[in-house]
Image (cartoon, rainbow, N blue to C red; front, side, top):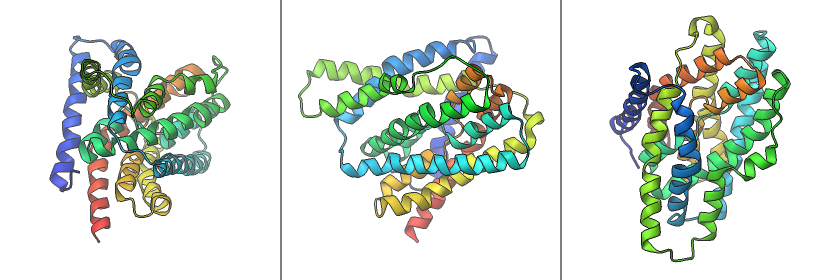
Length: 311
């Protein structure tokens, strides 16, 4: 586990460099913004399931792991409720309010959370990040998140929520990994899966870089500032106190929960925004701003967490 402040900042800024490669590739014309959808398909259907399957095979799994997604669901619910009060308090229009709720409550716990969690806590604790994301964030976004989009947006294509969850490739890979843990797989198959999974992190970083949009930050100064405050400050604080109560003395699970809770706005919120005609200009700006600022708040938060645990 990375411990010193310098190590933590080094890890997150290495992520910044990889994201910047994707952003520069888009700006230079080497790749197009539309290419992100191709990369996303490769990640979701091929490389990410391979990485998850391979990591789960060698991970220690216990019943205590279920406390992690419980913590995740409580954290997102609290942030959503606070965001609702704040959004109504500043009189946001319905489309912007719906976008604000998604941006403030749901983090990029997979695409950004996975690589940072791997770097800081290592492969042995990666299963905790998986449980937070798949059984926490994914469940939340395809239930409560979709409900918010439907209520505050316009009529969009109806989604079968249960089907979306059950057919989500990373979830299938996680379940398959758990079921096959006791079996000895052919070495050539394991190596092939490892090679495929190894492509996940750089592809994710490229995809994020291609997806970032400069947007119209100036139009949404107050709601964007509040989004950053709720998503990057309140969320990890709630995770620290709620997780401390739920997870008790499991410091690594608490660390992963605080880390995942500190992730910036989830990119999938923009897809929901487009589908349900929420304020996509705001969502684009929120994704960009929270992602950039998180490169400072995430290592700072992890450093403060280390200090609190030592104290």
